[in-house]
Length: 532
Ligand code: GLN
Image 1 (tube, helix red, strand yellow):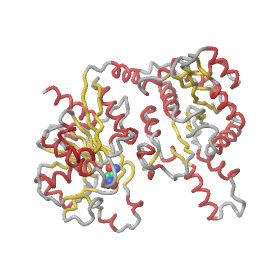
Image 2: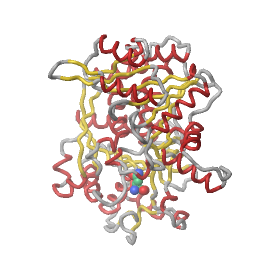
Image 3: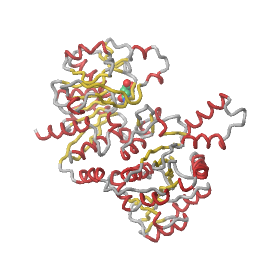
């Protein structure tokens, strides 16, 4: 049977429970344990797909096409495993399932209640496996004490009893506040969080204390006493410059060892070589490039989290610091592209939905194309690149996507014929991993160094195949097509040093120790531009 680590949060949200869990996952995986991760979110949205990126950050997409919380991206980047639709469960999803069962008569007329129905539904979604070398690290969103997260804590209590306490380790990630005026740490809020958990019948086995400065033994002792645990199980997790430093910092504090003791795991020796290399490169960057991200959700950088991380990974690979220049596409509309882009070494137009900012993004692409500045277009970024070329190179001034102009005379980006028959927009998104065949002798092929690739998608519109010929005639190489040849997946320009775009979201597959080829390509091209 699998073993379980539940990660809960105390005092305040935003303490990096996800990073703590993912770091533990990486440490265990490097030491021979199979790990998987799940996130249970207490909010009522059925999935995060419809949440506003400004409010909630990016929507991450799994291979099997689930739109998930951005924490899943961190999990994948740290543990280097592809997760699935079972990895992100929201209260909304739980209630949706229960109400469907109730309508279907599955509960045989019994009153449908939080206990047992909601709790049972939660428990049934905790990862299952017969492999005792496998550890599922399960993060519970929110903070203990929130009304919404109570059912999840109750589910942990019942589940621990059912699978045996020896198979479960509960980690509370909490904040230890530092009072500057009196130069001391205060553990009271942490004590309250521990008490709150205990009230619900769950004892934390390990307490991870986030804090600005090192915590004294005395404070650790207080927390240990309160939680009924040995002092070694109070682990400090001090603010660091980069999230990628967290795994090895937590190892130094013994987090992996404590969890292994509790779950009786045999850890093989590991020097965490690959991770160390990433950290080494990160600290030894001797070059610098500036990459623009031209978007419309730039107020919250988390809206482009995976793009930012993918840029960092590629930067580490080349020991190059990547400075991101955030550009609001609407500002380009008022001040012009030159004003913002004349000093960048490369640029990304990332994914997006809706009309706002489109004009500015297209102006930016014109500038990047004409001035031969390295450009990577992602999803909407590819669609806009083609609109730009149709308008300004092929001189079809009305060229557009039907997303922005349903009646354009030149719908270069459109719905596929079979999608047009579907009336419900929600059902027409292409989500998850799709394979693509790259054309030999293209930039795309040189970067990926293989013919068949797989990337994750999240979009509704596609390149209109009626325009393939005219695109070709205007210097666009269709460098990647779906395996059946019907869908344009990647494009590039023949007379530009690095102008490449993809209908997919390559950022979701970049890992710190395996940077993505397109991002590597962009950084290399940007460096080259800087040198010449
Ligand atoms: N809005 C575009 C579409 O739906 C692009 C989506 C995206 O960039 N993820 O096709």
